[in-house]
Image 1: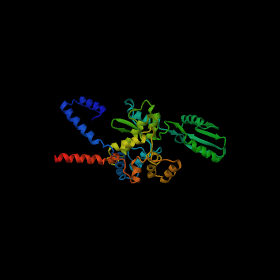
Image 2: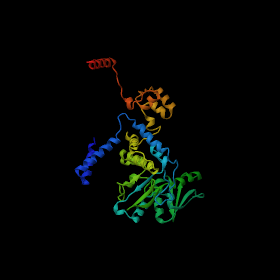
Image 3: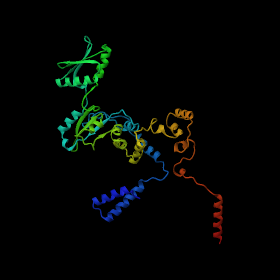
Image 4: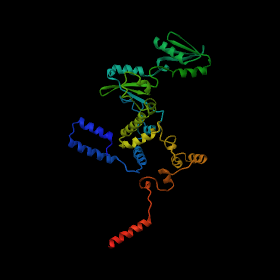
Length: 375
């Protein structure tokens, strides 16, 4: 009954913990009982049960986001509760992204962690200049840096990204004179210049160093998994981020599935809601089973169902029915939702079984039984 792989792990556990044969027998019996408890019956509507088990506690959640910036171990606005759960299941690409970076043992100190944090934080032009202005007489943009090193770095960045403009410097000031030199254009260019990336890891907007047990870790606002993984100082096995899309691009779909599972479980646990992890596993599997991260809603799983009636039952009813009529789609009524809509027996539980009853054979059997009783 116990799968072979689990049995191997069980044997290794018993061996490592010097468990006797008698104890091992009792322990195996307990494992088998637990396996029976967690199994489900053939034909059980596990999808509906999972949906109810997640959504019912989710309605009890506080529907607001908390600002935890005042706490020493928090970096920025942290979305919790139902809004965070919606972000995860909608597979959103724009939300409060963050990373937790653990360092290798040789870099695990406060000073080294601060030094690494300063190096990975992305600095834009607007972060390293003292002042910016538009010279209306010469129709050019003026930027003032704090030291000579910044001037050289700014010149390098501006020459790389700003094409078709004369860039020069004098002292701590840098001058940018575009070819199209009306005031409106200068303002537009100045606003774009402020957002140009100068140093650090692009995407890491802010950093903070905190102590977590024996580890000095770096919390970031913003993510860039690909660049951070290339750093020798980072412990790649413990690196964490809440961005499933970026994990999918860098590490693959299995890792993205684990992020969805972990983030949803932590969000529910923070609210004190005990949801069986198997329901969340089923949901994470559904979101990732076709090799990409898909949302639950109208543009994801629910909106891409094979059944026309199941799609129409969820959202955008008229659109799905009109499209189905236009393209000549058919519905085989093989699912639960469409059969319930039509008042038919749904193919779950006993509804999965089809019985044929032969009355003639029944009568013959009853007659034979009656004769035997009389004798």
